[in-house]
Amino acid sequence: MRISPKMKKALNDQVALEGLASSSYLAMASWCEVTGYKGAADYFYAQSDEERTHMIKIIHFLNDIGATATIPAIKAPTATYKSLEGLVKTALKNEQTVTKAIHKMVEIAQKEKDHSTYAFLEWFVNEQVQEETKFETILQKFDLIGRDKIAVNEIDKILAAEAASPEEPMA
Ligand SMILES: [Fe+2]
Ligand SMILES: [Fe+2]
Image (cartoon, rainbow, N blue to C red; front, side, top):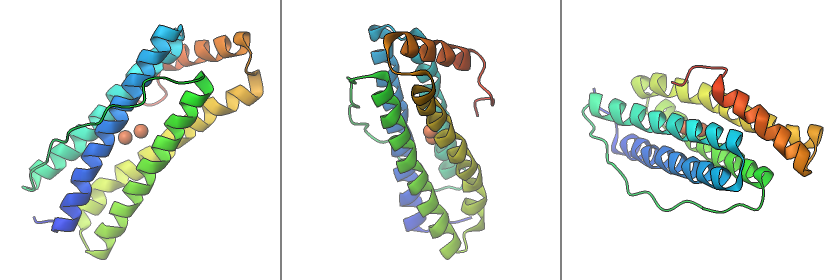
């Protein structure tokens, strides 16, 4: 089966975007670790791994259909954050950018009647709903529990529990 050059480029761009997300969450995890947010660190290390599996999923798809994936250079992510809440806000923004890119690819697939790529992308469409909800739920905790040291420590504990038993299996 063949995909158009446009579709191939979009998928390769998505490989880069998932790689950037993985790298960005790795930097977040590291910042959390040195700042003393052990739970959040575990959470974002796991999140970084998850994004890497997304990247590899697309690489496999491209290679399977004979389009050949391009392994991108990844630019250095932001390394420091003002607060844990600010960090999670950045994570949500990342996810919103990824969602937009995936929806764009779905539109290309639809337009080109590329049913194989369309079917492949369905998993990502659903995944993004979960990803955005995940970070929105964490952000809600700051409103519900608070932003002082005790509250943030409590949120860190919640993230530790989440990291220890993720709701859905890492795909
Ligand atoms: Fe992803
Ligand atoms: Fe994600």
